Length: 148
Image 1: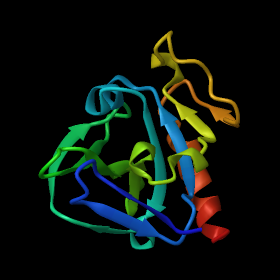
Image 2: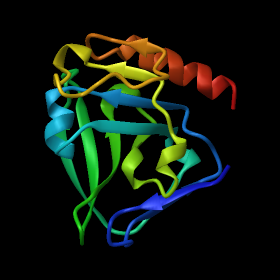
Image 3: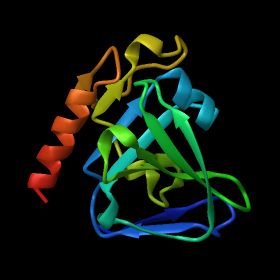
Image 4: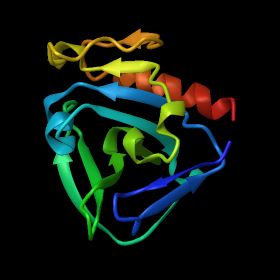
């Protein structure tokens, strides 16, 4: 299935013919701050998705202590992509920026120890990690990559 989406004003767009390798929910304080809300993202290999439009970047330390580089639309400032240092060659696309966001379901939840009390568990998550879940994320990505 083809997935498309983009920022609020439409200047930045993305498209891919593939399903995300993984959809994850992150509850860390860093992700809450950069999104202003709950962080849900679909992960792709960088060469599996085409992103067009002008972006600014912001580098920050994620909950795992590793650097992330976020890309924001230069016009409406919506975060449209995130490149995690700990998963080189991978790009995370916020679920809310997909045109068909209701079709994406997280299977992995990380930083459960920092989850806000008001956020309830999402049905369908098969793995929940109290911390960054780096090993689980890398394992899931490698498995998904082999099955492409």
